[in-house]
Image 1: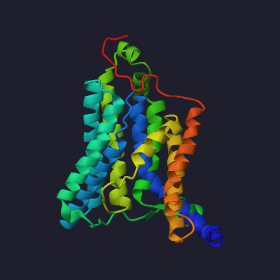
Image 2 (image 1 turned 90 degrees about the vertical axis):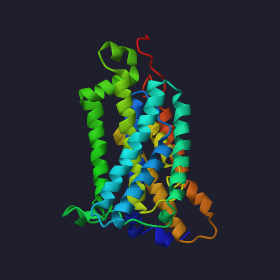
Image 3 (image 1 turned 135 degrees about the horizontal axis):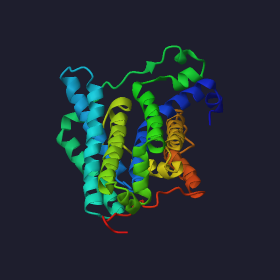
Amino acid sequence: MPWEQILTWSFVVGLLTAGIRLAVPVLLAVLGEIISERSGVMNLGLEGVMLVGGLSGFIVAYQLEQAGISGADWFGLFAGLSGGAIMGLLMAVLAVRFKTDQVVTGVTLVLLGQGLTSFVFRKFSALSGTRVKGLEAWAIPGLSKIPVIGDILFNHNAIVYLTVILVILCSVFLFRTNWGLALRAVGENPAAAETSGLNVDRIRTLAVMVGSAFAGFGGAVLTVAQLNIFTEGIIAGRGWIAIALVFFSRWQPIWGLVGAVLFGVADALQYRIQAFGLKDLPYEFLLMLPYVLTLLVLLRGTVRSDTPAALGVPYFKGKR
């Protein structure tokens, strides 16, 4: 192991900077799943939702770039968000309207997303190997000049800053607004919420759609703003990681941010160690590092459970 190259400020700064960037797609999915699960609906289909969002965003961004339209990347990101919302609507129709088993429905959504994106991607054979321009980094004036901290925190593209703002807004929405209180009430005791005049099915449907829109947006961020390319299976388990991090976060957006950054740093670490070309360390071991870390941090969620009481339980109107 080349410790003389690893134990340097430049390596640490580069690692943390990349870790924050890689955390964004997962964090967006985590925020969306927190909103969905706070309403009582467990959406295990995030992997498929992120795939659909990633492909939708990439196709739109690529086509608009070819047409010479400015802001193609932003249109692509919006397309990814919309694709995720559509998948969320499908999940809501099945799990909320028709009361299907949420675990089975979520897994079906994953399979649908994988099959659908593979079919469409192969149909658009011209997309294979193509790239989009993506978003440029935007250094925040003044703050980006701070030694070390400036490079790590204030020299990213706009999506990173937007995601941090969304974490704050989600926290305020869930714990400081009447709408957030209604959402949490539906996830804790839907019968009591209905007695109070809340429409349980409507709130759950909106929560699942918004949550899936976040996940689709995260998929588009990965393909349009970060990797600038789409390949089959590009999400690589990030949807499942997001679900695990929701339990780690105890359904709180701020802790979701912490978990996502830990995953991002671990992901960045395995990429950078691989770049050293170590022959005595199997690359498969490095690839599993982020997922092993996720399993370890998941143990935090077993210490004290804040699971919404009605999570995963279909609600039948009028039933007490």
